[in-house]
Image (cartoon, rainbow over all chains, first blue to last red):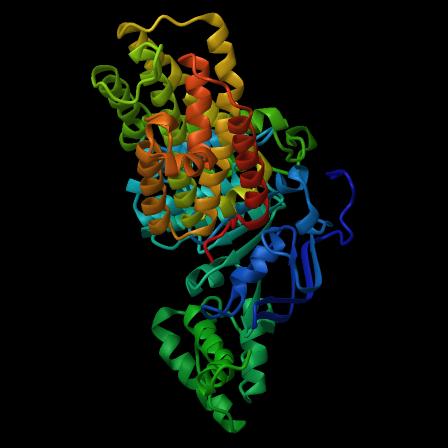
Length: 302
Length: 275
């Protein structure tokens, strides 16, 4: 198997490029022309309901599934034909953990590191993610959150350039979740591309530089969180303007809001004062999913 | 839990890839292939040998077979010492328990837990996983042979060097045959079915498949059937090596066919996911 890691990627900043990707499981079409780009130095979130095609897309990008049609390019390579040199550059945290249940936490992390030529310091990773608290515990006795932390550590111990994280903060307590979010952010800030699959809108709003909304195996919206929300509301006749007011006396905020609403009313508009947050994105997602849900309820179409 | 702040921790955990060039590390690369396979073999062997249930199947059960057949007047060959026929049956039992039953169960759970999916995305890859698994099985076999051999010596076995060497190729061929059959069961059936089938097949093959008792002790009508089983061929060859039985070309061919057929079947039908 040949795999030249010094070969330049075909797209300088794009670690992952997917165009018109299709894949079917027998008669069921899981991906139907998906398009997605993940840039280096950014966190890209894949959003969509269960069964939308997120896991299938990640499976194609990590070489677990062969693309039925379209293009999948990971770090400039076709992942299906990539060898160990390529796989060392890609870290994967899969949905169901992928952890050997009969091994112990630290034993498994050391094993994961030993597959790489120059891994991160295992003790540091374990300390940072709190794995040293359950280092000697059998994997099958770990809680869901502990398993998530171990799977995350295994995904990043090889210092990958591209990291796929499936629900990385699910089951974690708030303190660890905060720490993991900082870690994911720092991975992107140091040049890695992070592809995040999650149902947690807090993760997306707090972390993602770009989002890709998938429904029915297709990309139905993409861009920054703000772009996706704005574009969707413009489509509905709603314009979202983000403004930051400096030097406002907190006691004067209600009066300021009233004046702003009055000003909008003079233009025939109704003003909602809100920040772009998880609730907004979740509302947009539900709207975007609605046509697919209706189609699903009408009967099998794939 | 560390008291390091998230920012400090993240910075220390993730070395910079940009900024000060002196702080840069080489691009991520895999460990050498041999090191990857050895790491996986060591992990699998540790898991196998540190699991109470696995130890019961790998060591305790064959030891019971050894003691039982040494003391009871069954499964013997004319002209052979009871300990010799007992040891041949014991080593056959140990080989099937580790290569077939333990591997089927462990691999079946690995498949259900997504381990096979994750491994395929790492520098180890699917071929490295299988190579490490085979090596781990052989390592466990060595431990089994040492423990059971010492027990047999304590029970009166006096081995000759020639017969020990003769056992090695039979052992390897048996490991490939039963290892591939174990993987086939793990790769085709649901985990619950893997548990049931691998344990049931183990008991049937050991008790009635030519392992514990020589083929000659079966009713004449069953001779041909037992001879065609991988367990029958393995049992006959081990008795030929350790208890002065007759080496038959037929047994060698049968075991080779099972090894080749099993390996081809795994390459063709093994499923790496439980979807």
